Image 1 (tube, rainbow, N blue to C red):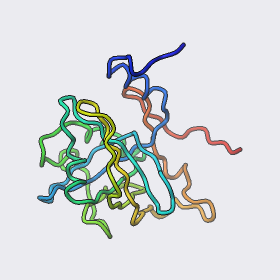
Image 2: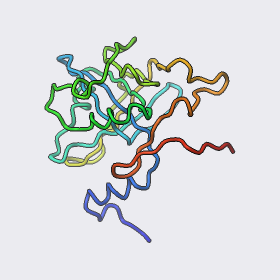
Image 3: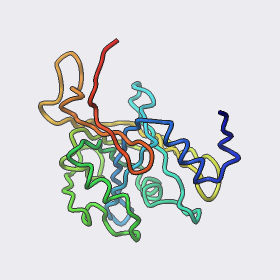
Amino acid sequence: MEIDLGALAPRDAHDMLIGALIPRPIAWVSTISGLRQVNLAPFSFFCGVTWSPPTLGFSVVNRSDGSRKDTIVNIEETGQFVVNMVSHDLAGRMVQTASSLPRGVSEADKAGIAMSPSTRVSVPRVKDARVAFECTLDRIVTVGQGTHAGNLVLGTIVLMHVRDGIVEEGKGIDPTRFDAIGRLGGSRYCRLQDIFEL
């Protein structure tokens, strides 16, 4: 079977792509506006880019009317953001922050999510996140135009927060104790159940 994603309706192409690119880690991105209003939203087109300088990237797709989401607008205004990683215990609250709210209304407040001050950026982080990355903006690369265009955000990691007890000496972060979830297609997510080494 061959599928030309460019020939499909955008929603159909979306469904095929997110069903094939699995599992995807979730960047739960906190930002603040120029007026210091907190925004918190999840994005699963997300990955590491390089470790020297330590850099990550995530994509924010425009709204269906072609307008840009608050996350992009805030990052352009402040040049800072935090990527909070989502562990299984935070999954339900993360999903609550995916809803579209009017600009200036805090998703964190609506979902009852405690935030903590960051150390090197002015954007707060999710207090209960087991891993969080304080970032400064490297650049935004716009791909496409209008409705469904992507905005690839590249951020330099200036500080990483890791919960005590999940780091294995000489091995980095213990994936079992981290218990991060992955995004699949539709409303489906996954956990690490079967870990093997090669």
